[in-house]
Image (spheres, rainbow, N blue to C red):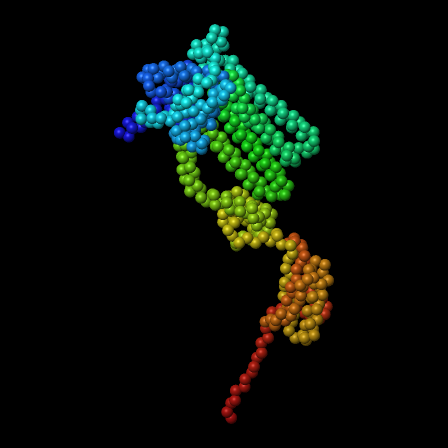
Length: 504
């Protein structure tokens, strides 16, 4: 029963939407099937069905003649493909404007929605538009009966009309192409280094597809003023819309490539190799998205129902996202590492319990070469959540040893040892003077401990180790010259002899 109801509700002429009505009418006019074209009119019900069809055929020929003489219809893509029509055009809900009649007074071509004999609501040329045809003066020729000497027809329109329209489109593109080529030639004369000029690169990328898109826009604007077959005009307007979408996609793709090249060159100059990989990924992702959008737009222009396909893509995308959850986590982690820059390639760092030099930051993982020369690969999702200590970012190194001198020296000698150590620090040109100190800290188990606190003012780790060695050797030499020895672990054992009383 449900299948029978669906069959009853389907209109055999495809008039469920404004787009379907206009498309079906143009198809009937192209085939010069005015009997079929009559079904796209809503006429008075005062006559029987046969008379209505005959009257509709007459109005179809008049409408075609009026449209051929500078009348216009909305392009395929601008026509509503919803059963309710457009609801934001300030017209009644059951009325839709789909074009204009030519002549001294430009009158709207209106569709109205009414019930069809099969029970569904359909759109058709309104009675108001039929009456408006009386006010438009058209040639007396009948499109169904070509005049003698008229050129051959192709797809329901005279060959000369096709040539005129296609020539106009090609001419406008050639004009814009010449203008863009001239602009590029002028820029080449004034831009010294074209490879490094972002403005030139963007202009060079944008002008060819922009010329094609402007040609499409110009053709849309000109077709209303050209006296040519409405069949040819409407057909070209429909399929030139595909050219417009292709031009927009081409423009966006070239712009993405230009931006990616400029960004990659800038990152390479700053030696940020990991950022270059992100730029490459974003460029590829943007291209895929643009390709999908252009494909959907082209299929819609061709009349393919893309709603089901988009819904399937949405379900498939959810399933893919659930299956690739870990991969997405690592991708986001890599973006966090690149954005926050806790480490860069070549940095010596500690990530959790891993210590080593960063060799590569990829889109999935980060590789660290340890001091044992092993290579550890950490997924970026895990790496970005770890506590990362970057040793390469230090601007100075802490010099904080504890020097132990032997027990048995006097308090004056201990003070002398502290002064010697502090003076060595002050005399060295790479020791920060603010805050440096040497202080007797505590009595150690085997030594009198002097604590040193200062900073070595270098950023290189190897150089800091060399300066540390110089300072320790200087301290050792100066203390030895002053008769103060460095302590080493010792232990003093006191033996107590106990004599037992023996009775006499």
